[in-house]
Image 1 (cartoon, one colour):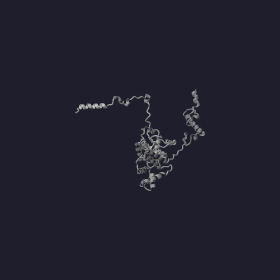
Image 2 (cartoon, one colour; image 1 turned 60 degrees about the vertical axis):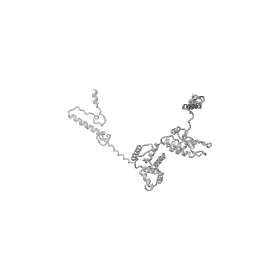
Image 3 (tube, helix red, strand yellow; image 1 turned 120 degrees about the vertical axis):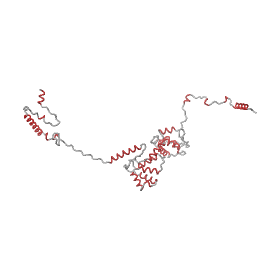
Image 4 (tube, helix red, strand yellow; image 1 turned 180 degrees about the horizontal axis):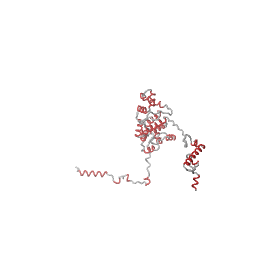
Length: 367
């Protein structure tokens, strides 16, 4: 029998026989010499420039996209702004490409080839940042495009606008219905049933338009089937009246418009109500102008100074002479025998005329 030590030595000999000679061992690849120059090692790679959209190979011969078709697609590009609707862009793009028919060319392949030309700005940058060959089908492209430019927060805002929809103060029935349908189209995944939509729109109308719908329904509008209610609304919306619009009986407190808070919308409605009330209120008649009464500054009579009878030449001279005679008599009785009455010019003078100095006073001052 072999001992344990002998068996161990035998195994070591067998392993040594199986080992490869050191000179036959291949060196690691990373230790191999690289004969490239510095310029070649620093040169930018020429790989990794593949597009995110993978267009299947087209078997048709002589296939090309016309320049007119590219121009038609580029006439309505999507930039990725907040106010743009990505669903509307997809609908428009499908409408254009659905008219194309090429033998042995799938329509989805044409859509994948043309869609990058319909983007610009932030939308084009988004597509360029997608990983290479990450979009294999048209459905993948639509799903990524909608998720990028229609986030869940936008869905929540549009659902709230649909739920809180109210007819505006100066909005006709047709305009309100068109705006309500625009909200539904802007959020096609809103999830509201036809019953919920019709009930929301009916309760959002003013009293006059609700009565009009009830009259068109021959009773209570809500007693009709949803399909009949929808037909009545469509028929009424096609009746386009003149520019005169129905006056809203009540101001909406929860009106919500795109990009406008309910408080701002309520303030706008209040201002419009005040302006309408001001326009319809009767204009008060102007107060009568009281005639200016003339008053003489000399005698106080109801005439002007120039027409005063007391200041005409004869009366004025007689009054002055009478006054001078009285003054002379008074001074003579007081013993002032040397008194000489002043000239007529320094006596009673019309208001506004300064008194004239006598020649005797001037002579005395000179002496």
